[in-house]
Length: 279
Ligand SMILES: Nc1ncnc2c1ncn2[C@@H]1O[C@H](COP(=O)(O)OP(=O)(O)O)[C@@H](O)[C@H]1O
Ligand SMILES: [Mg+2]
Image 1: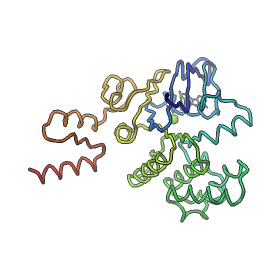
Image 2: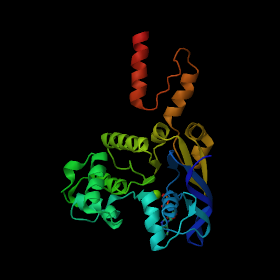
Image 3: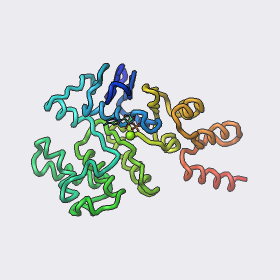
């Protein structure tokens, strides 16, 4: 039996009835997945995420978390937030406290945890994001990448089963992207399911196991290799073809590689070095 953490079925949503955004969206997010959500600007990725956390209600269809319909009552949303956390694309939509520690502690305090527990959750989240040294700093004086990490720490401190990140790598430098992926790997080993939107198809190929393409009002879920090998699908969703799956296809035609299939430029460079050594 597969364990579905989040299910949207037959979801329709429009901010304005003249312009429907999602017309028929069915997506299952299974526990343990690394799910990349791809699609054109304005395709409805953020809308889908806001439906998943009960910030929006669908006009038709259903949203369920762990088998239960999302209830948009105070109690329902409080319970939902302990399972599912959304980190907004712009950290400045999320950060408002005088210090990083206060910001990251806000969610756990709202859960009614003790001071000791709040402190423990906060320290754990700051460590996960590598930002302990920033704990007493005012968020608005930090760099964009640092503010993004603080926003993610705020969600991590709630220990969600499903962490949803809206374009988490947008605006990060390469070291920031590596640090984020490392953090997500750590979270995944402790059982967190992660879903992120991105425009970076190579990043999706490297990180995700499953892709959801949100485009034209619908959503298609597929294994990452299948989605990224589908040139028509990518073009239809205004996505650039990714080099990494093309390299894999090329390597499939070369003998003697023992199935080596690099998923990042670093891995490709290592393979080339190894081939140089052998040849
Ligand atoms: N608060 C809002 N009010 C009205 N229209 C909105 C609002 N937020 C998004 N939209 C519209 O909904 C569509 C989908 O937006 P969005 O979900 O943000 O897409 P994406 O995240 O894929 O770029 C776009 O046409 C956008 O202009
Ligand atoms: Mg968006």
